Image (cartoon, rainbow, N blue to C red; front, side, top):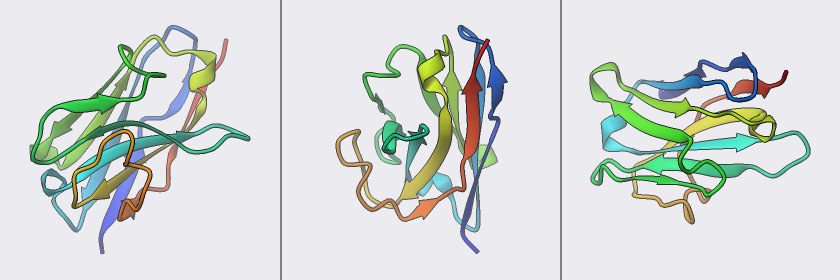
Length: 125
C-alpha cells in the first residue's frame, strides 16, 4: 500500500521553528517529485514548496521564501520542511504529496498522485 504520512506539526509561538516530516511507505520517494502544501481555515490550498527527483533545486512560494527549507533524506525515505521565523499566517494544515513527474510552484497543484492526510501547525502566542 502506497502511503505518505506527515508529522511534526504542533503549536509554536511567532518567530519559532518547526520541522515537518513526510515519510513514504510502499514506494521510494527519491523517484518522485515532492510538494508541500498548506490549507488555512477558510482559504484555498496553497502549494508552498517542491523538489523534483531529477533536479535538486528546491522551489518556494513567495509567502515562505527565505523562511522554509525543503530537503530530502533518501536513506530515511523522508522529505522534510524546515520552517523558521513562523508567523501567525502560517497557521494551517500542512500536506505533502508525491508525483512521478517534475513539478514547479506553478504546476504542483495539478494532479499530484499521492497525498498524506496532513499535520496541523498552529502559530500562536
